Length: 156
Image (cartoon, rainbow, N blue to C red; front, top):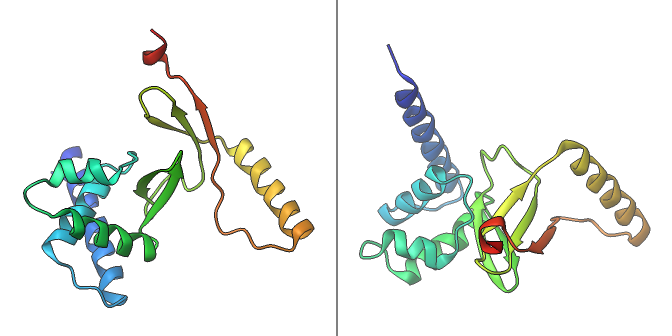
């Protein structure tokens, strides 16, 4: 019998393999560095990672230039999403995300990001997007909403 942990490992492995297939289809080789960074994003699918966070997690195994190149490739292929908040770039898994559209809340003191997703709020935002596209004759490719504030821990 397969337990919950085994099922989770199988799901993660399948997601990693699917991402590797996407990269192969686009002409990228599945190098060990790419595999490790992909695994990092799949294992931490709800986190917002900065380049320095990634570097700290793979230090000694993957060089910083390789991380930058890999992040560029993953972003370019739509596997991860880049969000620029206060001139800090955060990366999160886009493919397999259960929260395709969400609002970011950023603590001004500690820099942590929190996600907020509410279906009625998202519907309202999409309706506004449609109105803006018509009014300004523009095609919106990305929506980024950030609320800045101070989290509970930093207010203590």
